Structures are given as C-alpha cells and as structure tokens.
Image (cartoon, rainbow, N blue to C red; front, top):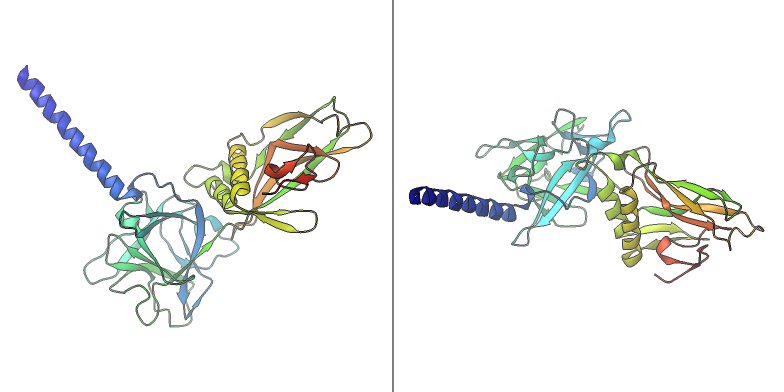
Length: 345
C-alpha cells in the first residue's frame, strides 16, 4: 500500500512538473497560447524598385502564399491579415500574421544552414515558426525576423530587376540584416485595412402616436457572423475604440477616448445579439404629441475594408430615438429624448 501511494505521489509530482514547465513555456512564448491581441486587420506590401508597389502578401485555399496584385476576380479576404502583436519579457516586439480567410498563420517551413528558407501560410498554431521579431525604423519601413530561423521575411526575387513578375515568392532570406542588402529584399509596409468607422443616425420609419408599438431590428454584415477565427467583430469594435467620425449638422467630427470607448462597447453588445433580433418601442408622448410626425432613428456604424466591395455595417435595434429632426450627436452625448442638444465629450 505504501509502495502504491509512493508511486502515485511520484506520478502526480511528475504531472505537476510537466504542467509547470508547459505553463512557463506558454508564458515565455505567448503565441502558443490563444492569440488574443489580433484586433488590427492589415494588408502588407513589399518595397520594390525603391518604392512601395501595389502587390500584397496573399494566402490561398491550398495554404501557399506569395506577393501578388489583387484582381477583380480575387477574394479580398486572402489579402487580409490579423496582426497579432505582443511584447516579450525583454520588451521586444513580436508578431504573428493570421490570414483572415483561412485562419492559419504565415510561418517559416524549412531552412538549412547558409540557405534561404521556405514560407507556408498553412500553419495551424502560432508557434516559433509563425512568430516574427518586428523591427520598425521609420513610419513606413518594417521588418519581420524569424524567431526560429536565421533570416527575414523577404521577396524571393531580386527587386531591382524589371519587369516584376505577377507572383513573387516569399522566403526567409538567410544572412540579411534588417534593411540590409543592396535591393531591400526584406522591407515591408503594413497598412490598416479597416477605415476610420463612421457613425450616424439612420431614419427607418415614422411614428404618429405614443399608443402604438413600433418594431426595430438589429442587423449587421455577414462578416460579423463568421467563426471566431476569422470574424471582423473584434477588429471593428477595436477600430471604433481608437476613434470614429460622426456627421453633425454641418461638419464631420471625430470622437476618441471616453466617447469612442462607450460607443465601441455599445456596438460590441449589439454584435452579441442575434442578427435580425427585433425590439418593440413606444414613442414618448412629448414627441408623438398629435401635432408632429416623429422619425424613428437607429444608431448605425460602418467602415470600409480595403479590397472588399461592401462596407462593414451594424445597426442596433435597441438604440432608438424618436425625434422630429435628426439627432445631433452620438448616443453617449445626447441630452433630452430627441437628442437635439449634446454634452461635451
């Protein structure tokens, strides 16, 4: 019995040690845990012939990737990347690039000493092969140095030679320093793919009396209904939190900080509702007073996405204002039931 307990104790101790080691490894390598800081959706293009040209890094249904221009017939989601960024314990910036369409990561595949490595866009987890040291020397120059290999993410062709092929291979360029080499093989520009979101009050109908019920509906773009791996929801609300624009009576105003944070939380709650969910409202008696026809306004936000035909859009069915004329400010700043006056942000 004592021998059994001793053996069991050794097994439990071994499991605890393994768990501690695994935890320590995940702490040291956060990319192996759930990559959560991926709210920035970007497109990435190379420095070719001394200027940033139009081709962008794109994935494919097979998991291969290269640098190419987006054609009208292309699915723009293959050109979009979730920029998952964090700081190491030493303060260095590291990133993983997860494709919006496939949900898989850009990673080094094979590399031998003193040779260039190959690149895949089919990595299922953000391990060391899919983790890159990020270096920025100017506003537009960025470099991705592989954590697992000796080299930088680069175009696999001499950028000085014209004409540039329609498809440029990607490699982990061995032996080059950031920005090194005569032809700037490994210089990249990272561009935001989501525009500054715009908020507005949209009239959806009219109300005559305070005794009748009026039905409103929450609606949002189908992209917000996709899987958690590829959804725009987190990226969209994060963009709102950074700042959004609102068209007032005569000019467009940009809101940030507290107002933007409040609106982003409201939109996040709306996206948590079922698409098409309905709400019932009654018009306030002071608005539907028998003398005026009130408009029914819903708060709507939208943003353009580079390479996609239709904007991202969300309309909240619960955030409603009955008013004779259009509300004058975003929801958190409204004074009065008709929102004709605004508090300072």
